[in-house]
Every structure is written in C-alpha cells, then in structure tokens.
Image (cartoon, rainbow, N blue to C red; front, side):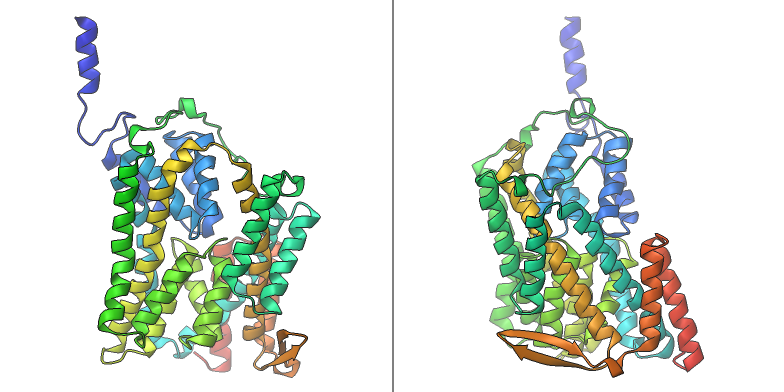
Amino acid sequence: MHDTEALHHREAKPADVPSHGIPFGEAVRVWARVAALSFGGPAGQIAVMHRIIVEEKRWIGETRFLHALNYCTLLPGPEAQQLAIYIGWLLHKTKGGLVAGTLFVLPGALAIMALSWIYALFGNVGPVEALFFGLKAAVLAIVLEAVLRIGRRALRNKVMVGLAAAAFMALAFFRAPFPLVVFAAGLIGYVGGRLGWEAFLASGGHGKFAGKYVADTDSALGEGIPEHALLKRSWLLKVAAWGVLLWGGPLLLLLLFLGEASVFTAIGVFFSKMAMVTFGGAYAVLSYVAQQAVEHYHWLKPGEMLDGLAMAETTPGPLIMVTQFVGFMGAYRMPGSLHPLLAGTLGGLLTTWVTFVPCFLWIFLGAPFMEKMRSNKALAAALAAITAAVVGVILNLAVWFALHVLFGTLYEMRAFGMTVDVPVFSSVNIPSLALTVGAVIAVFRFKVGTLTVLAACALLGIVYGAIVGLA
C-alpha cells in the first residue's frame, strides 16, 4: 500500500510539469535569458545555449545536444534558432518549440525594426551616415574572420579545399545561382559518404564544447526518446497542413489581391525561396540576397547591405535578421498607395514571417526522424561538403562587399563565359580602406572581440564624419 501511495504521489504533478520535472514557466524564463544573450553570431549563440541548457541546467546531455545541432546545421536557415526550437520541442512539446524559437528571434526583430525606421528617416543625415561608414569597415573584417574560422574547421583535406575553391569560382566568375552551388556540394558529399570516401567522412561536423561534460543519462531528459517525440504519421500530417497554411497562405493572398507586380508579393516569394536555400548561415546566403536585392530588384544600394549587416551584428538574435532590413527598405522605396514607413514596416514583418516560419516546420517535421537516427554517415558527409562550399561562398561575399565599399567605380569584364567585376583603382576610398585595414589588424592580429571592433569603428566613423563635415 505504501508503495502504491508513493507511486500516485509521484504521478500527481502540475499540468505544466512533464515527466522530466522541468516546469514550463521556468523554461520560458530560461529561453528569454538565452535570447537576451544571443549576440555574436551562431557560434556564440550556440555556446551560450550549451552553457545554460547543458552545463548549468543539465536539461539535456552533451550527446543529444550535438545530435540536434548536427541536424540543424544540415537545414536551411539559422541553425542556432532551429536548435532552440528542437530543444524546446524535446522538453515541452510543440508549445516549447514555439516559445523557444519565437523568443530567440523577438529581441532582434524589434531592434532591427527600430533601426530600420531610424535608417529610413535619418540615413542620409551626417551623423548616421558617418556611423555606418565606420561600421562597414568592421563588418568587412568580421566577414573575413568568418571565412577563416569556418575554413579551419571545414577544409581539412585537399578535396574540401577544392570544393571551397569551386564554389567561390562558380559564384564570383560564372554567376552561378547560390542554391545550385549548395545543392551540388551536398550531393557530392552525400555520394562520397555513401561510397565511404575518407575525404568526406573525416571532415566537418562539430566537436565537443569546452566546459563540463554532461552525459545524457545524467540530464533531466535522460537518454530515451520522449513519448511525444516518437514518429507518428498523424503528427506529420498535422504539422505539414499547418505549415502550408501559415507559410503559403500569406503568399497566396498576396498573389490573389495584389498581383505579381506588387513589391509585397515579390518580397514574400523571394524570401520564401531564400528560406529553402539558406544553407551555411547568414554570411553564406547574403551573397545571394545582395545579388538579387541590389542588382535584380533594386531594393538597396550595395553599401546598404553592409549597413543592414552592421545592424544585425550589433543586435541580439540570428544574423539572418538582416533580411528584415532588406524587406523594410524594399517596401519603403516602393510603397504604392501606402505611407512609406507603413509599407516598410509591413515589408519587414512579411520578410521575417516567411523567413522564420519554415524553421519551425523543418524541426517539427524532421526532429522525430532524427530522434530515431543517432548517426548517419551519408548525411554527415553531405554536411561536410556543404560546409566546405560555404567557405567559398562567404569568401565571395567578402570580395563582393569589399569591391562595392572600397571602390567608387567598377566595370564588368567578360571573357570565356566569365563575368568579373573589376575595380577602377583610382576610385579607391582611402579613408574607408584605412579603417578596414585597421579593423582587420584588430581582429586577426590582436584578437579583438566583435562588439569591441564594431564600437571602435563606429566611433572612428563619427569622428571622421565630424572632421570632414558629414556630422
């Protein structure tokens, strides 16, 4: 009788406390804390999440954390936010994933929206122009550092170096579509993994994090699969139906009521396509966004892409939030019958919606499968190949930015099927070049942190603006 009473006592838990004993209210507070500390790009965000969720709270173990991270890295979209959705879903079902993923992007979305308003209203005013003049130099250095950081992890043999070089040449010289480059790299890696080629099996992936190691068996969740995470056909159909409605519904309404010529339709369709091909993180996809937003849609000027990236670098949340700025400016400059600021706000919100809704869909649909797959060599090889190609993609982004920021005039040179932007060296912006070189030295030689470099370059930009009369 005593044992039976004890069993009933253990089972009599509040409705918001699942079997692992983590109250949902506590989880909400923790995810808000993670969101507030999510500066510094995906590497820093994932490290913060690991320290809080694994080491401090011990909600999940190291192996499960890395397993979820590897899956999220394979997906299009921001892997740090998708990892938050995955862990939130594991701990508290659908509502846990929705809260974790939404809180992760909310601070950045609000900050970028406020900065977009300021930029639209005062972007050509001296102090603001001088501020972003300085920030552009810092962003160039940070993008170059990202090439080196990812390259050190991904390019571990000649095959991976070759993939990175091929990706760079395809984009820089032949203007190959970004999705095609990513797909080709993933396919090559998958085939290589299936065939057991060592060059693919030995590269890529994530190592263990520094700090305390927490075994899955010692975590609150344990090493088993929670009941709600078991693969169920009814769950997959329900998620797919909601995903189509929430993601595709707004696009259909835009097409029906505004038509293909509307800037809102163009924004919705473009960023929906982008959400399906954003492999490799924000830096990788920005070359694709820049190419389309600047050269095809004419929503932005080349230098303004760097302004948007500077906003994303200095605010919490995923760096891909820079796309909200792109959507804002596109609608702001083509408002139709709306007030430009209202149009910009709607364009920014639409961009954020179609960019991040798919992230929830990928996790809710795919995570049950991944919980059944502890290791898959072919998928790991595809990840390694994509990561290697991303090094070339980010290098192309850095070159593109440098050419458009440091030189006032470019001309296209065409030969043997290639199209190359060549700078007119007499048009070089000497102050911008000097500030960029200083930022590069600070990042690479003295290992100065991202936020410090951004703040220093912003201050120097304002000082320079005051000297030459911008401010």
